[in-house]
Length: 317
Image (tube, rainbow, N blue to C red; front, side, top):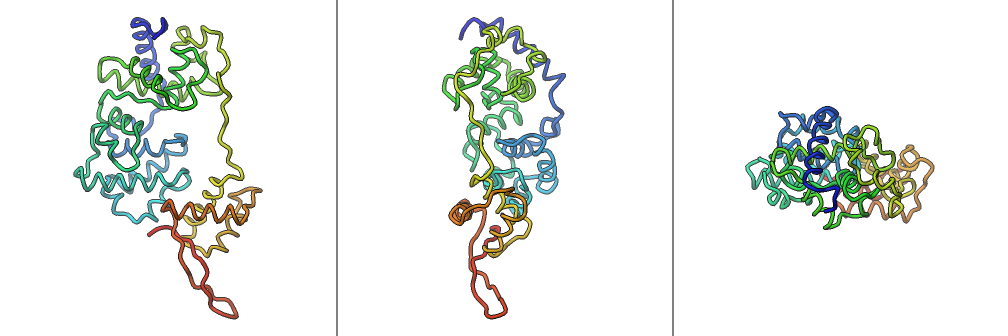
């Protein structure tokens, strides 16, 4: 580590950022003392690539309906997908249900407390396992998300942005910055994550509100430009947009003849001006079926001349 990360400086960073968090951290339900490990696991899955404001109402309704893993595991997949609503990336809902089933079956309906056991659950990756072990059980795991990586890159490395994807060097830096005390380490993880989310943001950092602006290596270096040009995810016209429109139609109607579904997704406003080609629509439907988010089967369609079989798409049972 360089001079900006000498032990004395690190101690100041810990103290200031943790104090800032105690004053300015958001009052989120999964941060409250009464939050259960299950509620924290649900929040971590829902918050992946999804803003807090969209997660809050869905998380609240989810925990009221399914307060334990066993409750969720017993539900039909169609109900789980409906309850997921418009959070996006609905495969997360099915993975969370699969994890719930494993917890109920193999862990006595209790979320496991170690990162290793959490990582063995279906759909749980390295970040989620570390975050739940840390935030739910007070284990000083190294938690590294995009907000933390960006804050570390600026405070310590003097770069505007972290690398495009997580590197071993970034993980090593996060480990080196962890406080030795377990409780302080868990708080540090939450504090830096919040700092990155609210102050040290990607596009418009609020340096005037940063508790460690005077120690920031990026500011000391004159706030150099990023060493690569970030490219945002496109949405309009993509398969993701079409898949989302199909899922919205299925949540609203349960099952639909494929022809009717195509008309609905292009006319209901969920696609804006985009009109998918037949090839794109077929590709998206096939992808949803392959992902277990929809089921394609024959259905009977009756018109004034005859009865015929037409493909029907529905939510899984």
